[in-house]
Length: 136
Image (cartoon, rainbow, N blue to C red):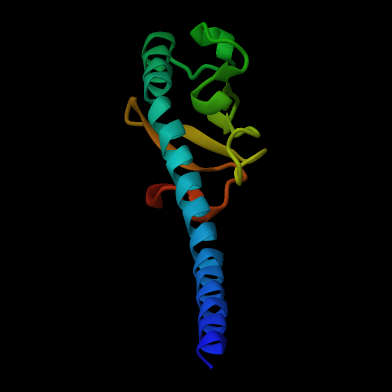
């Protein structure tokens, strides 16, 4: 009888661990994807500043990477790339960012009273991975 109880206990323990893992693993993967998006946005800070400086000196927004002296595409964290498009700065997430592969996030510069304000609603990235101020 004790052996049967031990075996049932092992099966029950294994089932509980399986259920916990099934819930925790996707949540952890989503969390890590959000971290990678935040990291990419932090790395854009110097590029956003370059775009703003270009706007102040040239009176218009740049239309391609070469206007800021950047490679096309410009590589940032984890091999993700940034390309200047007519919409703004587009981040392309690559295969090194699981869960985000081939997704994009576009930061759009908006001219507001002779300065630039950045919006981040563009691209194909799901809302659940975007920072709260970038969700539609």
